[in-house]
Each structure stands twice: as C-alpha cells, then as structure tokens.
Image 1 (cartoon, rainbow, N blue to C red):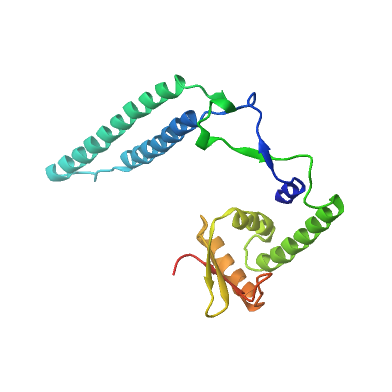
Image 2: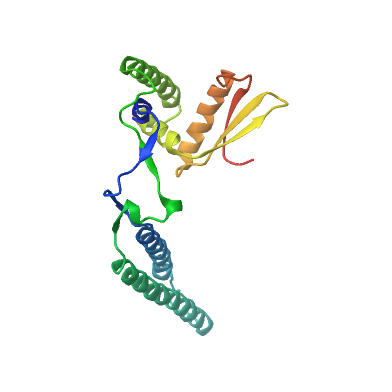
Length: 216
C-alpha cells in the first residue's frame, strides 16, 4: 500500500555497488515495444482487407495497392525492429549506479526514520479503507456487475487526473481521464455526480472539490 512509504523519512544516495536498469537499454526496449505495436496494428489491417465475391478490375487493383502499401510498411518496421533488437542485445541490461550520468542518478527513501509512529499509520490505513468502502458502495449501484466496484476504483486511483483551481469561484476541479470501457465511464459519471453533491472542501483550503470526467 502507498501509505507504507510514509513510514520512511527523507532520502539517501543509493550505494554505488547496486545495479540498476541501463537507461539506454530501457529506451531501446521501449522503442521496440512501440514499433511492435505499430506492426501488430498494420498486420491486423492487412488481414482485414477483403474483396467482393466477383471483384471488378478497379476494385482488384485498389485491393492490391492497399496490400502492397501495408506490406511495405510492415517490412520497414521489421527491419527497424531487428536493428533495435540488435542494439539492445549489444547494450548492457543492468549497470552500476555510479555508471549513470549525473543527471540520471536518483536517491531512495531512508529506512531508519519514520514520518508517523506505526499506530498512526494503522489508523490512516483504516480510515482510507473505510473511505474506499463507502465509495465502492456508491459506485456499486451504477454497475451491471457490482463486484467490479473495488477493481474499478483502483483503476480510477491509478488513472491520471488534471487539477484546475478556480480561485474566483473557490473551486478545485479534478478532471479524470476516460477509461477503456464506455460502460465504466457511464458508471463513473453517475458516481462523480454523487460525489459533487457532497460539496466537499479540499483540506486546508476553502476550495470546493468538483469532479469531472474527460475534457470540456
């Protein structure tokens, strides 16, 4: 749970002997994954091309041209992916921390200090769990499968959001990004309507929280 990180206080340098993933290897690996996804989409488009039962010559020519263009793009991606894989193979996967460029070095949380005593952490966890349970109860009413409520909440918590303060109106708008399923978006919009009805004030401010989904 993320709250466990609060037990640790401050940061410290990571010992030079510890190995980390080589940033260059990670970049190459990311590029390979991206181009492989592009190739997969092109292959799907290639496989979906169809002809009528008795195609005329213009239709046949157009079909062959589309196939040719897609095949060419796929072959180019194949070459690029093979080159990137070779580069990745020639690049060390892990390197010592002291081999990282200065701007890419990082620290870790200290282990010997604590933000809160353990009883306080347990109390915070209990409050967070009760809050999550209350939200799950609200969300459950808008789902075809009520048992999905907690899983959907976790997805919401992991989704990026935009924060927009409205100092004139004393509001803080929390705008969630759309999720992958339209049915979940619909349930979330109803859920957010109920949250907005509570007119909750953001702690330590006079700003009323307003929850929205998607862009304006």
